[in-house]
Image (cartoon, rainbow, N blue to C red; front, top):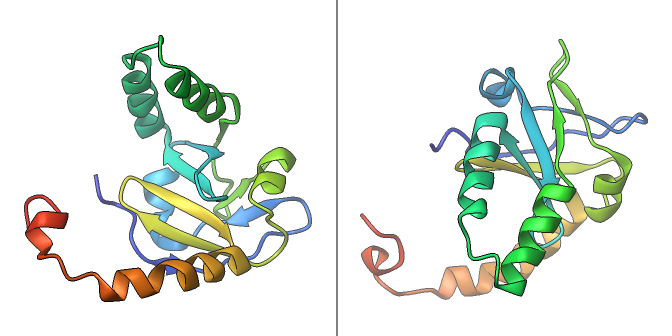
Length: 147
């Protein structure tokens, strides 16, 4: 599933609601799950995709402490929601605090999910990773299987 691509810059309103970019609304109209992501962002999955990933996690070895830690955080912070008629979702206060979301947000499409970033954090992340990305010279087929 590669429904989510691109970069958008919606704003968070005073009630903690975020307007989903219009191009993603149909895919998320039936429901979604917002949870903690990595590098300080939030992940937004269509409900079915969240459940698919959660089921895969259930099959991971429970004897591994890092696996248990990851699964706990991923599931414990999960917030199911359905966009309202205007395409808004509510980001709960603990998730807003984790991702340092205030007003200006950047929403990126990342294949099977959206990522919601504080716009300053996204700019800082890009500044950190772009030099290595630009300098990377390994042939594509060795980096991305199938290409």
